[in-house]
Length: 389
Ligand SMILES: [Zn+2]
Image (tube, rainbow, N blue to C red):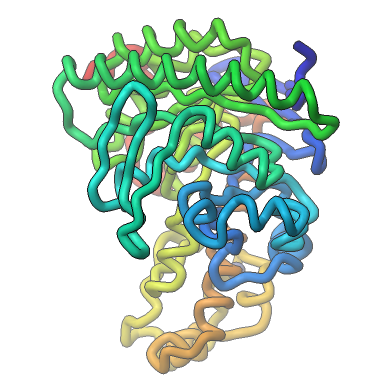
């Protein structure tokens, strides 16, 4: 099958697994590695689409199948011309499969070979997701990149449960893939479906899952089930176990990661795409990421601080306002605070990704990685294969 999206590698780091590339989609070209702002309800909370596209330069955002399926419904979105038109977003959209939210948000749920039955967290109504129905919902959205339905086990689970669950995720991915290929054969628009590597915190299961999913010859692969409460070295270890098996010429997406100082760590392990709610959620809660570390805006020390939030940031918030003013807005519960804080936090993530990409292209990524680890005080040593869960 012809590639629906095309991944072009521009540079590879000779010392790590990092690479810089271009992801060609029907809604534009995306520079990788890329951080995707999370727009759960077809909106990145606190920002409008012009800020996202023009001020922040976002080329790819994530929206949430579970939430949009429940409300307003995929058929309504399809009727209104698809998600791009519905939310007035000109660039690319990735939608998750809904699996993660079914397992983390919904009330009663029952997993069977057929799929998962669950109760809406909004009103208790019963619904059912199958590998086929979540592909249909995501095609109704018109997503550029769809994710196959998976089971994301909580942490920790037994090896036995993780294996059983992983085999089911592989069977679901095959069904999703077969259905997807039938559906897009009748369509003129271009979409890609990524299967998700699971296997909890067991490297042997991760490898087995990745090998099984290679048969699907997908346009990209995701590593899911990380960032579910496990210690950070374990998440990185799961990526290390998986990544060498995945095809070099396809993008790899680590789902739900991470903190700003983790971004280069994942890139060093061969990851091209990431998403995380932290920059948006933390912004609203008063936790701001700066080039000098984390800043908690409510602290009294900022009461009369006339400096910008981050002197090294050129976002509108940092160019225009003082820490004292942002603290005042936060303590007063003003709407403007959430907007200004989110704008800055997303900008910080985008800046980190730009720095990473530039470093890979300039063949100085290892230096960048070491400098970043020293600044953040985190452990950066790469020891592929020693993180057995
Ligand atoms: Zn800023």
